[in-house]
Length: 343
Image 1 (tube, rainbow, N blue to C red):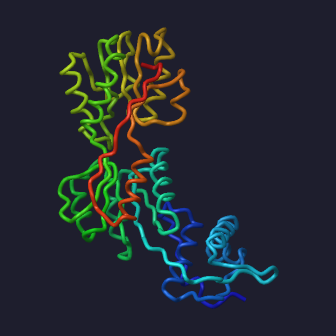
Image 2 (cartoon, rainbow, N blue to C red; image 1 turned 180 degrees about the vertical axis):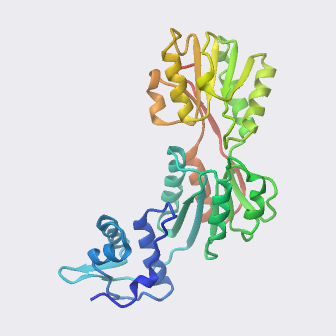
Image 3 (spheres, rainbow, N blue to C red; image 1 turned 135 degrees about the horizontal axis):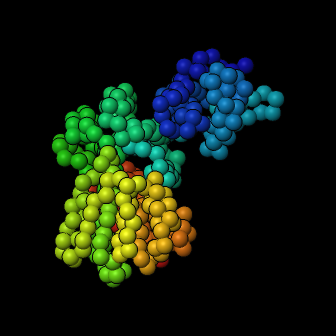
């Protein structure tokens, strides 16, 4: 029979993006650290855990397997699971708040988690670029975190984001991807320099761009991408005498010979490729394509699409190292141009 009151120590947050098996794992580890779950404590069966917490059997089994790999729990055939070790301490409790979930954000998350290893418990939330949801999640946060890692990108209303962020105590905040003005407390940052990055990337591609007359950047009117990207784009086009245009809706934009398109959103890339396919223009010869954010698939589409991208792995690793080394600093992540036949 399982020890009494185990479920009062287990918290599954439906709003969190943290996998439920990790939430279950972290709850049990927290109970051990606080002395509420002791050595030889008898744990519920997988079936009971699944029923009481309304989670799948696979989730419960995965949590126990993870704890067993850590050496925290043991099992006796026919009798069930129990706490085998209590000399375990998770040094870091991390509140992770991303603007959206995408392939690139997953790379950041995976590199952060793998670098921190088993020393960290992470509560992961997504606010979908919605400032109202951002405020709600921050207001509902617990005060027990050692670090807050936040990506501050909003579709609208984000001008006051610094007011919410300033409520976080000194020495606990790390901004990811973007620095925003108005932060009063001490903080670290692992960020992109959006204006400089696009300028430098286009400069590196200047020999290939020379065969085109016009550069068009697809920049939706309603987007979380920072305006600094457009500043760098304008500066480059003015300095090197390119015709240019900001396209807000690629569906309505004609595709002409001698044009290069820079796309930011993955869905816009799909529309752009469909429109080019309906013409007789050949990518890399009559029309150029540059896409933001490197993905494995872009190496193969049209024999390779040229990308400009930050190093998302390095972003996660640098953030983790800042935590592990107990330091707060500003780290500018390098931007890379990958030249391929689409240009």
